[in-house]
Image 1 (tube, rainbow over the protein chains, first blue to last red):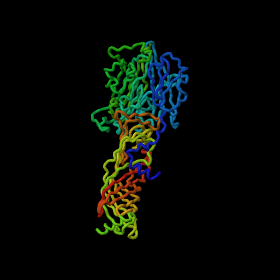
Image 2: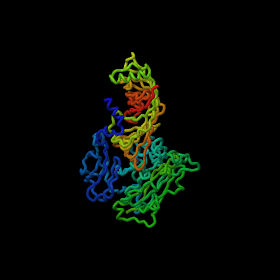
Image 3: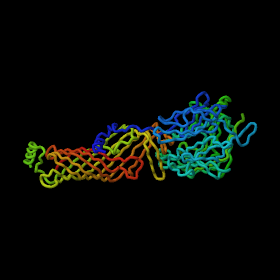
Image 4: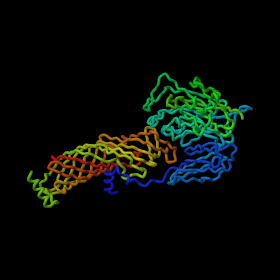
Length: 381
Length: 249
């Protein structure tokens, strides 16, 4: 490179737009929108970074559906947008970026939202079992998932693990706030631990991460901007929940902390951590498809139909495994509309956390909540 | 002395290019000046889409210079050296696309691809020694070029990213949006080299018996960062211009 160019640059650095090179082709390979044509979708698609769930009306035939896509500018997808495929089991698509350098594989699942039932059942009540035996590694962090009796992946539990991955603090599954412990009450269990988030967490004003596990989505794109809105609680649910029971083992951490306003943790004496365990049955509207982590049990949220909450007195140290059983309590003046229920307009959220103040980054480092053998009773149709 | 200057003027009037014999073997000067420039990549990487803001900051310099005539009395060549205390700093605001970055801190490691705004401030206080060959064009005008070395007594490199998004790991990773005032600060002071060296060239003009003005450009040949520093994926070099006024003793 000629010397004169250097000199010119030094002198004209502020006017250097002339030196700006031509823009590189896009390196990203995202599915931005995904839809099915015709009036068969029952609610908006849930689009994650590499998974998509499409909800269709009850009775839709799954063997011949053709999703359409809008991609990152210049990207291509295989199979092509509009290709009819059988979605009896999930289908996989590969998106290639405009610059040809990057590929992303998406799993696309199409569901009516009906849950399979296991466990005990009677004429009035049937039961859905969550045993936390299945965990997979996704982008290096653990994700719990449920399988049907035929072994197919029904849905994934969500957690804040994706956000914790960003802190660079975890080198193995067990380092994540939400992970599996092989020694549960019955087989393996879910284990939620409140962790420090280290340098990067402190830097972004999020010095602590409670272990959490919930039905819904963790929206990574909002994890920094609006962490309370990143936890999107709720999954389509076509039954009326009656009660939630199971086994927990809770050990609060030694010292309770709160953020000191500068992003660091300060110890609070005479305060013990508590876990939290609750469920929300609500109407998912276009404006509010989820309940977010920002005051999820709000008494004034008009969409909430019923809730089940573990009483505060039972959220302390358990000294070993203890059973819990909490009923869903209808909110005043609320009823379940059978038509809406069938059309998939209601959602259910189940939320576990190792620190009840986790949303505000309060809690005790090392608080540990183990959960196993959870049973959701629903009213038979 | 006065007649020598008259002779100089006379000689200049007759033949601008003929050098007078009045110069002393050494000439000393002190000078004060301003640096304007940047720590910048040798060529703007493709990831940088726009430079939306730049401030040269106020960078003072004070220097003592000595020029020694080389060879016989009519030689036009000088050897120029000295010492200066100076500040070289800047702040910039740039918009980048798919800018790859890795950050290590203690046990934490974060890597990703950033698209959005990056503000950068660079500041170094240095003691600099130049070594240049000077060519006397006329008794009042000297061109000079050579090398310089700086020892940095204070150094800072930092800034923030905002108004954009990070793709975790690579361009297909999870997308984390920074918006509505959320930003991440960075600081790599410890990653800056404490010694720099480079090339410089300039001109100085004596506009009366003792007073002179000088203009110089210095280009760093050493990356401002340590070689093993990977967070900023391209090397950056200090490129600064200096304007000074001096007094010849």
